[in-house]
Length: 158
Image 1 (cartoon, helix red, strand yellow):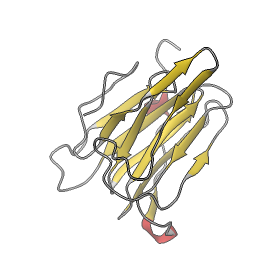
Image 2: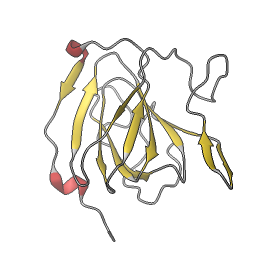
Image 3: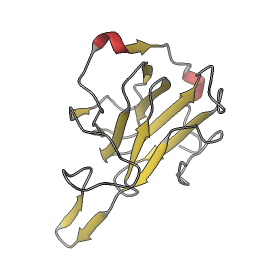
Image 4: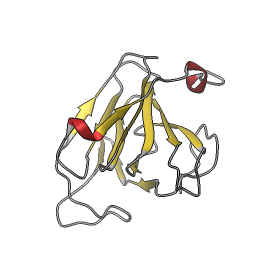
């Protein structure tokens, strides 16, 4: 279930999880554990094969794409990002549902995106960084890209 973020549109998407992450804050800054060997985050049950960071300029839409087999596990570690999820799976009970969430390190969550759920993001601030930890080795033939509809990415009250 997607938690209440600053912006929410649509219903939940079957198989998508938003796992709350602990944010340890003190007068020196903060530390947020995204994953750790031997420790199971609730809802995170697959190995991590790759960890990478991705960025884009403020307002640049990096969407839509999906994977046939791979699950993505994304967290925003710097800045503020609008993440979009769209369920176009023929056999899904949530087919057609779309979710947009404004996420960042002040409300840290690991977003688990199952195979065949289209997803993408748009930074709302400069220097925004998204970390992804897929559950299988990268295979370019597993990825499918779709053109974004800019109307989906309008920021309300921005």
